[in-house]
Each structure stands twice: as structure tokens, then as C-alpha cells.
Length: 143
Image (cartoon, rainbow, N blue to C red):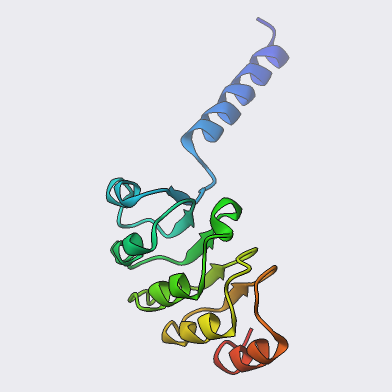
């Protein structure tokens, strides 16, 4: 085998190995209480794909959680009650929260997030939050 061709094969094999081994980290999809049970407690990124409100307290398992996202497929179901359920958890490392496209999330729901002072970023595109709610949340979250 020629030297150039061999180097290309080795490089391709190395690239494939890196991709397979997971150089990047994708958020754990949370679809049910069983998903929570099966996901490592050290998970720091989750996407809520389909989780009934009564199971949100089980998210407490992820005390090191840093990134929390509601999937677009679940967004239409999420209300202020879900936001309050999140804010009731002890998540001292939570920095990024996305309620994008959750049209039933209002000023009241976002105000409940003041229980999570570590939040440094909120994604609120497509929510029911008003300018008044945004001004109030800026006092709590200097983002």
C-alpha cells in the first residue's frame, strides 16, 4: 500500500473513532419517569421530550444539571405549572433554560424561576411573556 493512501486510511479511521466515541455531548432526552431512572445522575444536559407534570419532581435526580430545554414537540403542553415545578427543584448549577415555543408560559411562570438564581441564560422565544414580565425578570436574571 502506498504511503499517502495508508495515511488517509489511518486518518479516516481516527476520525470515525472520534465520532463514534462521542467527542460532542448531546442532551439526554427525557421522555418518561423511566427515562429519568435510566439516565445517569451526573447528566448535565437534558431535553424534556415528553414528561407528565407529575414526574417533573423526579428531575431532582440531576443535581448537577446545567442546561435544561423543553423540546418543541412538548412546548405546546408546557404551562406556568411546569415552570413552577422546575423552580421547586434544588439545581444549584442550572445556567441555561429554554422554554422556547412554550406559548402558555407567562410572566407569572418566569417569575417563579427566581428560586434558581444560578440561571444566566433564558430562551423565551414564542412564549406568552410580556414586556412587563421581561423587565421584571431582568432584575433577577442580569442577562
